Amino acid sequence: MSRQRSRSRSLAIQALYQWQIAGQDVVDIVSHFMVEQDTKSFDTQYFEELVHGVPASLDKLDEALSSCLDRSLEAVDPVERAILRVGAYELIEHPEIPYRVVINEAVELAKTFGAEKGHRYVNGVLDKAARALRPLEAAARR
Image (cartoon, rainbow, N blue to C red; front, side, top):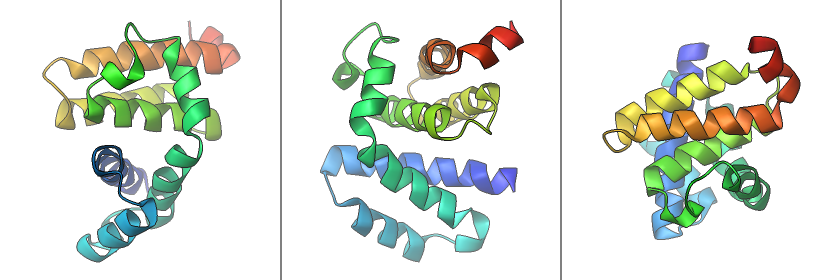
């Protein structure tokens, strides 16, 4: 199950990148991915939730991230921006996923898709966001 979740996140990052860059409708993007990908290799429900949920929660996500950034969100690399938004979405909407798992998954995605040292930036931003969004869980881990 967790490997399928990881694959769902990876595909969601690609889909959200496409949404950010091309401005294409998320329904069309999801449909395209469902046709092009082996749907047995990932959790399709989770993929759809992320691809629909991030744009639907954009203001809330961007607000949660903005205080953790050293620049405007629009100045962040588009791949890393998509990764940060998925991470923030999971921190807010999926409290059952430990925040360390959310951060680790995001860091791995940044190593795969992001700029050379992008994973360090993603780690730092999401660590700050986790402390703000999940203060009890973060304090218990320190």
